[in-house]
Image 1 (cartoon, helix red, strand yellow):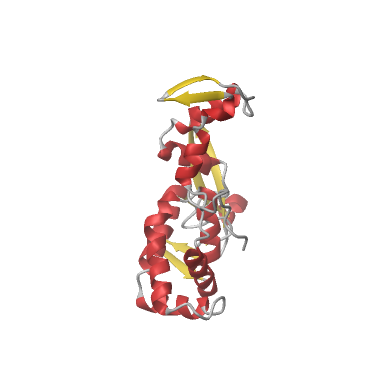
Image 2 (cartoon, rainbow, N blue to C red; image 1 turned 90 degrees about the vertical axis):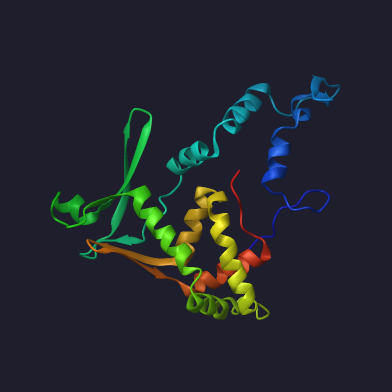
Length: 226
């Protein structure tokens, strides 16, 4: 695992630092005094067109930016979701105007048509949300904390059970701040398989993944979204 990138002063680069950097008008050749900007004596290193595009994105709501980023990110449960007949589900999507609708579709349905599987297609947002809700509940279970601690000791023997518990508790409030790509990486790390049937779904975890994630959390290596 690579070390986190730091500023010239040795501080960790976080979301607030990135925002300040993206708002620094010195990069477009300007100087700022008491809130007003003036042409500077130095050359710009970013052209105005790029600057305007970046700030158009920053003016969007975080929810809208996350949704747009999700459309370009691998599906959260790709390769992990299976139906009652054991067939894998594949991510797909349709567009209506500017709106994107994402789904997971059974390979059985893709090969044999509608009606060939009792659960043929599920909305991606709903099934992904249900899996995340289960993960969040699992993080609070004592037996999961104990298993995570044992797995984490394979990475660092000095990790205590209290450390593992604290790491899992941190992930819950942090989750919504993560980039979609980071969320997908964590789900792949933690989840071995998700089985969906008419009666609900079952999430099978990777304990070694939980241990590795706990070590990342304690080392401060998780990346948050802008």
